[in-house]
Image 1 (tube, rainbow, N blue to C red):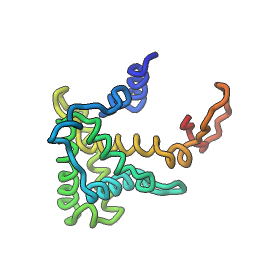
Image 2 (tube, helix red, strand yellow):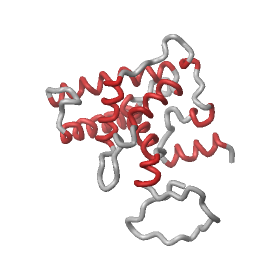
Image 3 (spheres, helix red, strand yellow):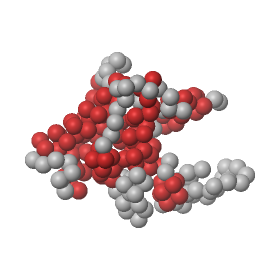
Length: 190
């Protein structure tokens, strides 16, 4: 199995294709990184993305997405790995998410309470699922799906996600296919 087949298999396990998965194969080399029109994120954008990510994966008995600096991860992947049309969709999505918050909660996402943020993102997740189900091949991916995928990717590939939310062995030993599993055990990162 080559890397492309492996990524396709992982994407199928996650229920679809991962936007930006080409980054695994190409090392994030798109034309947009060298063009004058490449996207730039402000410190406020990174803070906003950290709060969105924290709402998706909040701190519990393990640190949340904000502690893993998922907002910084998202900006790197979008800037360096996404095609220009996907970058545009993502950047417009930042504004759309805030507008949806103002419409639903009468305040910006950053001013909303954690419960209001959660309810908004649940509504956006339902919206993106309906959109993805009915979209044509040439239609762009829904912006919230991008944010959610990047949150999961960034968190579970971070040191915090791999070592605290999952079980991790830096240098695994021999393969053991029959390790007992007890309900509540963490999944393996390696």
